[in-house]
Structure formats: structure tokens, C-alpha cells
Length: 217
Image (cartoon, rainbow, N blue to C red; front, side, top):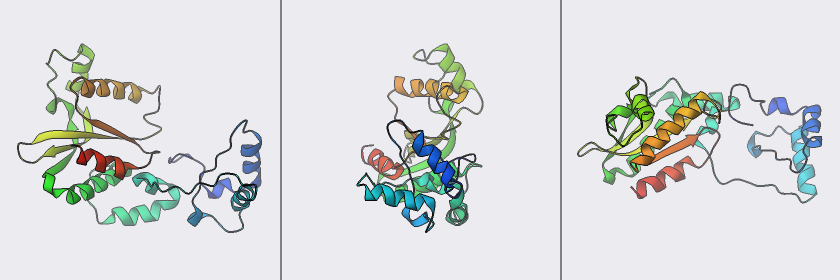
């Protein structure tokens, strides 16, 4: 169940008829993603998990968390508390959560003398007039509002080192207009070999990915 305002919440999924439809229409696999600590006791979902466990099917306890887990509706209060004393750089909580993670990791890697700036214009990173770029790419960079969500740079010399994008899973889905813009942006970064990391809001393991990127910078 992806993290979006329109998704079915865990509580709304508890009705037996919903579970019955989900199970009977699965042709090869049925996968239920849930958290043990949020599972209402005596619920139909808990009974389903017990049934799966009884028949020796796979119950996987994930060791990988996501910074975007707090975007779920049932985590609204926890998200509010978490972001309450932190700097807000965006109207989107997904970007605020990522900013908080980046700042935490940069503090842990302070010896690298790195800093981050949000919503940095693309035309300030690359030269739109460069012949290496296509007409479409150059035009895209010149547009107001065309930016990277976060740019990590070296304080000494103000040298750009790493770009980070936060992709809302629905807004950036394949075939959308935003997905087409993403492809143009990816091509621009690829042509100059500049590292760009994309984090989907329905993904996981952001902390580990960023830590490795900082170590290999």
C-alpha cells in the first residue's frame, strides 16, 4: 500500500471482504506488507498472518526502514512531533524528512566539510549554453523553477558534489509529464557524469544509500 492520501489504510483493510477479494484474485502471489507493532489484536489481518505462519509460508521481518515511513496517515502525529523542532524547507513533508536526514548525516561526516542547499536551480550547476546539451535540455535548464531538490556541496570553493531528488511515487510515476521531465534531467546529469540520486517516497534504505554516497564522494 503506497504512501499517499488516497491509499487504503491498514484499518480500512481489516474487513473480511477486502481480504477475501485480495486473496482470491491473486493468480500467483499474495503479498501483505504490515508492521507487527501496528497490528490490532484480534483483527482479520492478524488472523491471516497467523494462518500464513501456520502453513509455513514466508513471514519476512524487514531490517530496512525508510525515512518516508512517517508519511503514512497513521503516522501523522509522530511525523508532526518529529518535524516539530526541525527546519522546514518545503511545503512537502517528504522533502522536509529528507532534509532532516541529510543534515544528520552531514553532521556525522563533518570532516568532509560538506553542506546542503535545497531547491537549487539547475542553470547554476550547469551551463545551458554548453554544446554538450541538446536544445531541449538547454531550454529545460533555463526555465524558472527547474531545480534539484537538494545539492550537497563542498564548503571550500563551493564545489557541487551530489544532487538529490525526492520523487513522490504518484506524481513521478512512469508515463506522467513529470516522468518525462525527470528523464531530461537525468540525461543532463549523465552527460557530465555528475551524481544524482533519486529517492522514491515508496522506497526504503535512504540512510544507507546516502551514507555510501558520502563515503565514496
